[in-house]
Image (cartoon, rainbow, N blue to C red; front, side, top):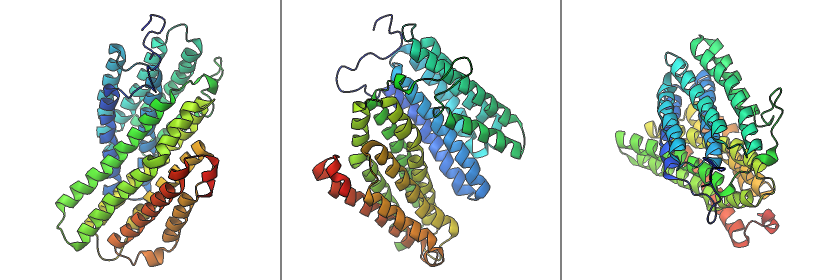
Length: 399
């Protein structure tokens, strides 16, 4: 690597930049974070907890996706970059450990850890980019300014009390979400040009696919751990199989055709930064959220598989796949250019199940789980049958 290149990745020798072992190691922290998020919802499933957990989930997603953008340019095999990632892992463990009580006694730990991760990484990237990459360095100077503003709010929110914390952290989350839309505009520094975001498409697609694997893996771990603690019966075995098959179906829907189509479109795009911002930075968040909510529903079903259903079970068992399908529908719309009928039909059926709550709540949780799983299976099979033989060209719009 030349001196001019500094800590940046070189050109890939073939295909795209591989995901390095240190990036995979870094992701382990987020396996823990996803587990903490789902367990928080399981233990206190109510409106305020859902709102607070939603804010924390968005925060966790942004610190991960921002790091993935950074390592799209920086070379994780360089010792300096590795050191930063290892330091972020330590801060990430503090952040993840704080999640269950992030709006309580551990709020300062969460807020400070989050600010350190976002500000520290961005400051390092600014320092690491060589002078010859003026546009890229200016882009990260703007990003650093936004992270400093949001980071201050995360720290302040950690030390205020009551509803003030919710409002401050809600504002910090909003700043995080709107920054890319505003192209990180900063007074005196202007806005970044999306055309300057020269992402390496295959690497970005693979990184986001791995986060989906993290979420699905956590779902399977929850299912297995809960099933191992319950008394086995016909109902619990049915619920266990349904939960596992639902995870397989979600994997199928995302990875069978969609992930490869996204990688290909991003690699071939004339404007990869804009596509990566929409399809991977924003539209993967509901996909991950859907998997997490489904995992919560699996735990509810395994705990009480028979008898009358509960509102929280209906909301998670049906709502999780609904959010997941909505996210994948929009993601595939971004990369393929049309809304898939298979996904729209699945969403319509799930919405109907929610709308018919007086009837669906009479079903046992295990039976409700089977219905939601069947919807996912049908969507997956429909897409594979309609698109696989003809690829992803325009003729496949009639699926």
